[in-house]
Image (cartoon, rainbow, N blue to C red):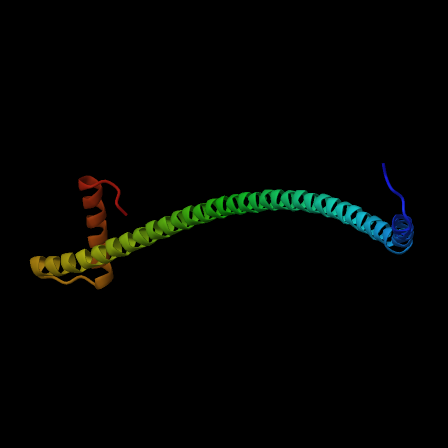
Length: 166
């Protein structure tokens, strides 16, 4: 069996004293430090979870903002395209109106030039006819009567030959 002597009793008392001292001095502070550590870890985990939730919310919000920005950009592009089409139509209509106006002006200018050329030609023909008639009849009538006779001749001549020109 176990032989109990004073040394062993002293060792048991020493051991119990050591356990009591360690419990009082070391065990409780260690348990307290472990509890504080556990609390800090739980708090850190809660903060990390909150940060993760905040990050997820921010990510969702940024995705919504990107989507909204894309929609707005598409709207702006569509509006610009529509405005461009409207401007293009306006420019085409203006160009067509300018073209029509210029064509009418050119036709009017051509008509004026035609009338001037016809009048000038008639005047030259009258002068040539009077000169030819003077040489032929060797008799000079007054210039007004000559011009009237030649104009009447030319008018009758053109009506018979070409229809109504003047």
